[in-house]
Length: 309
Length: 155
Image 1 (cartoon, chains in turn green, purple):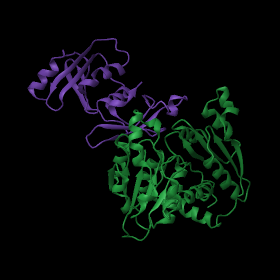
Image 2 (tube, rainbow over the protein chains, first blue to last red):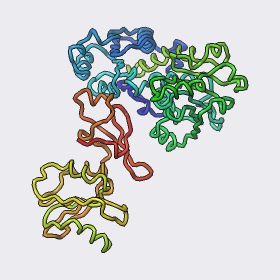
Image 3 (cartoon, rainbow over the protein chains, first blue to last red):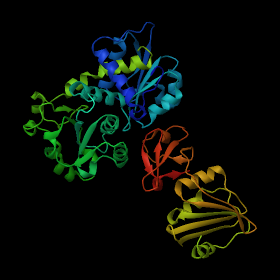
Image 4 (cartoon, rainbow over the protein chains, first blue to last red):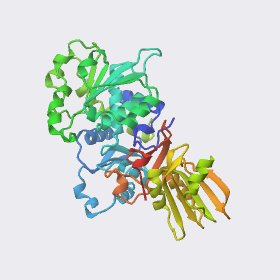
């Protein structure tokens, strides 16, 4: 199946086979086995809102493939400031580059950019909606630590999600992507920040066993993966409620006394107190290694959409 | 249609020529009227009429006018079980149940204020699916939010 020329906008657009293709290319990238571009390729990074990790890892990925990078990391110095529409900006930039990476605060902006541009468009985050390369990175982290797509008949992985599951876009995208693979999902959040109904319905329709709870202590010992996301103070209408529940959503080393030896803790980062630093020293912490996978995964995606592999 | 239901429909006066939209959820009846354009002739509206199937329903009768395909598509989104009858000389000459379209373009506004369609000149696009209870769900092609049929805003 050829990826060349495809856009990467939403995890929902990807089949199991395409996800496996990305992960296989990421493994090659990690081993230094991806070829370099034979002709000069240019990537435009259009970052209308700040990002450090995503932008730098895309730039590093492109340069490692022998390509070059143009773009901006702050829209305040662009013609957007003069009132130019996103659609027009993309129609202009598409003439300068072979692939466009866009981060924009409005949801659906990457889809609109893809409709405006002829070259492939990669979504680097469109507001609270999608951040597909983060999801592929998360899947790659799971694949590296567990036989997620391993031998037929292997027991399904038990994957827990902890924190704000209502607004956490990484949780929505990752759970949908995981629905292609054998796994059981456990969602742990305050009731007011539970997984949205429409995501739950997609998972149920696809036959993914899902459990919901409010206390991580009740299930942590049975998990293979625990994916932690931030509980944001501003999401609570009642600040007293936030103060009351926040303690239940902070992961500490003392809670890991009886976990499975193969448990790995993931987090999209940055963390703001939801995993205490004593967890960093346990063999279960994988979040920093996870962040390091951003470059090979983005190398893989660039190589695929530009027809290099 | 049972005699009781026939009687119910006739609670809204019969029309000689035109269109009858029946089996509208009662609370969606005025929305149906709102989305119809060029209502220059007689329009009669019944709300909270008793219905064997729906409990309560709404009926709209429009004299001397047929519906455009766009209007039928819009009605199907807010009243997925509506039936439409074409009336000539007090007789029903054609009757059909609306079919919700699989994709709607241009006439539903995304109510997510952060959706790009509310910030740029973009023709909106939603995919339509049926939930287990028969109600409709609309998914914005841009921001990917999913809405129940009663949440949507038809323009």
